Image 1 (cartoon, rainbow, N blue to C red):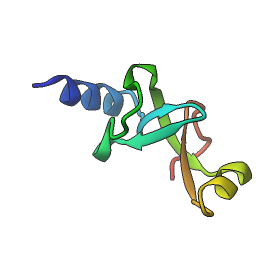
Image 2 (cartoon, rainbow, N blue to C red):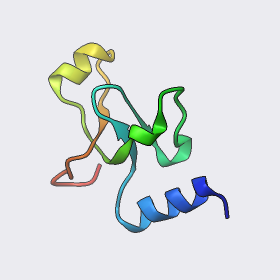
Image 3 (spheres, rainbow, N blue to C red):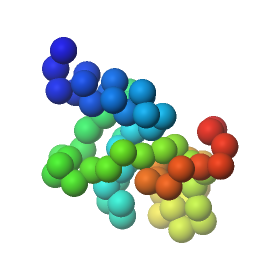
Image 4 (cartoon, one colour):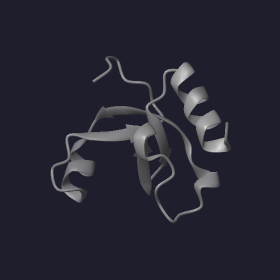
Length: 74
């Protein structure tokens, strides 16, 4: 088992949907650590409905990653 697989297993076991670098980027378990940024700054994240600011910046995206747990899972 490699580090990526261990991380995915831990995130899944704890109810997370991916990672987020607040204010920068987010990624789901299926495309984990996909960016060129310093992934050491990422935090465990949940998939939540996109807020108005995120939608405006990202072409009306419906979902975003957040460190705050949603009331309901999408």
